[in-house]
Image (cartoon, rainbow over all chains, first blue to last red; front, side, top):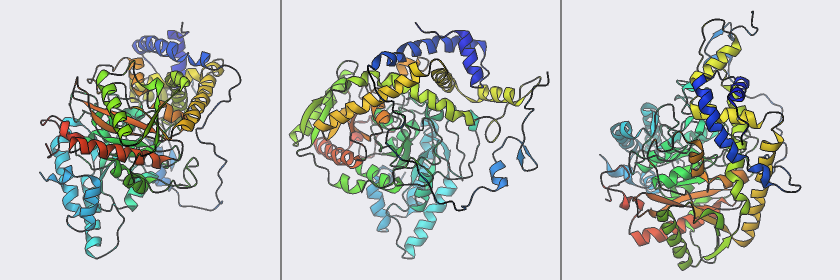
Length: 98
Length: 505
């Protein structure tokens, strides 16, 4: 049985910064329980000592010469921002004043 | 309407190079057809008529002046809307990016521009490429050229439908769990997922970075080979791109021959769960390959039973991290809630309004899989399954040069049929997902239509990492065997009143 509850869905959505509605919580709880019961089969798939694979093709670190290259101007970097002021991204208060 | 649009890309390239047609004439023919049929099929989210015609005119001018131009100069192309383009909006099929015009081109787009290929527009996809039907697009579903009420596959349904409905001779797709190959199978077209790292991902809006790979979409194998040769290669902007090239795919496609080739049939990817008409065409294709001199063997890949489960832990985990960048600060949508809006509440309200249900499901699932206390059991186990799947492939490739399976268990289903049943939807990719987990290349090409519904069936070949050429080799060989038998391409079987029917009909 899956351990997905409405409170857990609300908590996870909070961590992921998604303000979900009650209807979504109910719907996702049901759907994610089904999905999680299914994918939980991976827990029984591996016996013994098997290394984890994070990346399909083995690779070494890649470095480049430390030389200047063209990059976005300040105006270009801000061009897609919902709000900006004085050459910076403008956002709402970081701290809650309550 | 000009019948130029029905010709294969390699023929059009020859006509352009020899000056028998102009790029403006060809590009305009595609734009005319797009204007006429795109409202019904919704393959394109954005059409770049002016930009495409400007590139075409430049090609014509330089060709007339006697300049030597790249091989595909003047040949139009469509681009999936999760690749950045400086001259067209890039939405990834999401409301959160509606209207966003990037400040840089994806490396693949830059390569298309360097090849002087007119970019016709941006094609529809499941939101952030999450889906296998294109129904998850925030801008409405795309129809299948063979039957507009059916799905074209996904996530790259727009690119496959554009090529299948003759709205472009070639297109760019991206494949994270089958998003190029599955739509190819659904629409009777050809699609290739190259080896992980063969094509730069720079400028591809990331879904799952260890699985994503850009590749070609076309109506025949040689056309995809020509396109892979244009877009492949190392890119210093993508640290996971392979340091060296994989040779000429065009040469491999022209050399197509299966004599003595060992083809391994994957035991786990046939029979039960596969539609009768799919299995019948698949079995016939194996007979044809055998008759042409291939050696058919069976290979056992027991860990494939866990591939979908591992995939639906790894993908959401990576996606939940990648999609954190949509934070209402630097680009895209911002929704300000009533009351006391802090940056955190604005972010949460924006993501609530901007993301569709499948994206939210996967972000929540990924957040769960990565959370403390569950990480080892879920994400950790999934990464170990990934190792087991790689070992299965390594063993199978000792017995066979290429592996084979149907690309998908069924033909195209009706739009709406599985849309709110995530688990049923996830099973569509059962045959395509293992290649992404292992990083190996795969091709899907059409092998006929299913008797019960008349819809296209695709076959998938897989090759070891960096052996993409083998796919073009075997794919081109099977394609020419089938076309000799049919007396034409797959479009012959399309009902005359559909968009998949060519003038050959």
